[in-house]
Amino acid sequence: MRAHLGDQLVIESTKSDAVRRDGEIVGLHHTDGTPPYDVRWADTDEVTLVFPGPDAHIHHLHQGPPGTARETATPDTGKVEAAASRAPSAGSPNPGDIGRRVAAERRRQGLGREDVAHHARMSPAYLTYLEEHPADPSLAALIRLADALGTTVAVLRGGGVDLPPGQGHALLHPRLQDLGPDECRALLSTHGVGRVAVSTLDGHPAVVPVNYEFLDDTIAFRTAPESLPAAAVGTEVAFEVDHVDDALSQGWSVLAVGPASVVTEPDAVHGLTERAHSTPWPGGERAMWVSIRPTSLTGRRITAADA
Image 1 (cartoon, rainbow, N blue to C red):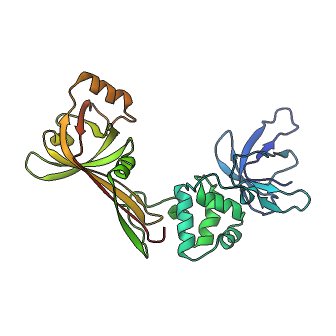
Image 2: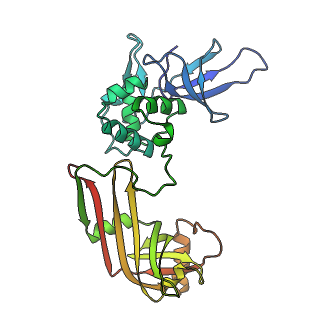
Image 3: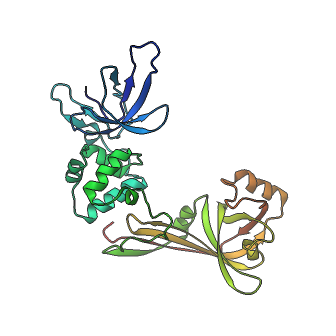
């Protein structure tokens, strides 16, 4: 029996009262595709290590999306070849958080993909896929990767999510770039979580995170009339949004400065409410829309100097 990543394992007993089970093979322990396998069961979504018996068979899924790291067992040689290593890349890599952490730790230690894949008992093509695409590796695969990299599963999964961003090491050769207004608008995108800086009634400064929308060159957020963000109304405020990539020790920030006012025109309020991507995360009654029309829009980005 030989399998590929993504194939379906089906267990169908000959007993009349037996229950058929099937699941996706999400981890291989041998490069030739022989058992055991890590299987994510369709009925429970749990991942277990499976040694298939005589009542099990493999449903091979030969077709996959272009550029994916499917492992295809070559019948006449028994070797596992990565179909993705022969296929053209479908655009630039867009790794998930786990893939970024794996790649960053591997590069930090000066290890090649072949070495890490060998020690983690997985195909180099699958490691390539994991580092370059959003993926959901099995727990068993993460354990082997963590062992191969000398780290922990918690670190690869982002176990420090409750810590402030920026815990990683600074880049050896960083480059700080100023961003133009058009790029700042693109990074503000359409919505997200940003921070508005206001002065409280007693004169103290405060910075408050809010869910925001960015429409027609205007930043808008919902709040309650007596809330701290409502102190922005009638004043010139600063609004900041950023992104920090801990795995790559790089990121960007955008700062908008401008007057804040309450949106009172009924059609405008209705339009903002209808087009909003999210209700305010704090919950409660927050029906007052506050708009900020930037008079100044600046930003900065930190990347590697050789990027």
